[in-house]
Image (cartoon, rainbow over all chains, first blue to last red; front, side, top):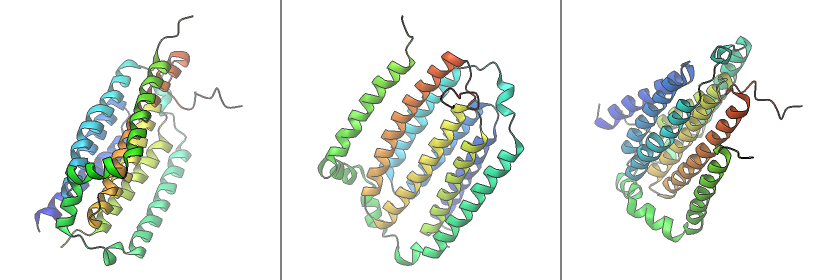
Length: 171
Length: 101
């Protein structure tokens, strides 16, 4: 059993278990903390896939910035009728699980039917080269410069939009 | 034993469908948002997997853009939830039905 197999199973099992725990907890703060653990496990998986830049960005942007935003909003909002949040029709739960299970079986069937591992074998040196900041940055500032600028503009628009939506109305 | 591409794809499919189930069974709008983040992350895992196995950095570039859009979506979405909470004092998505006829 080499290190890659070991790391895949450790991080994969953490990611799968924390995802399930995240959607079944009643306290939304606990859900948010499990989601942070899930993002950290995903960052570990990205490291095993030689994607170092994405792994670091995952920790900084997702587990750092976005989840802090979620926890901050959870701190601000305290709904008084929390009981009603859990009055769920049991038929809805069964229906959701059937839908998810059927689609999961379809996806697993498709993954094995297509058999991508027969055509794709990992070339480690190319894979390491693709994950460096250098190669991602080179693509980003040459072929993908327009989407990059558009992403910057989107962030500006989102900042202004969030301020306008959340500020107190004076009339 | 060697980790092939299928292992990562099945983990990604599983996480995506856990996110779908979370959207369907939760009534709290913030938890629904967190389930959507989980689905975005499982799609990111697929992109990084293919990018790494093909030795091509374009997939990781798209993960970068997905993260940008997810950050913008979370900021605007949570601002909308705060605005709704200020008016209706609830985050239960069954009670937010002012646009339903």
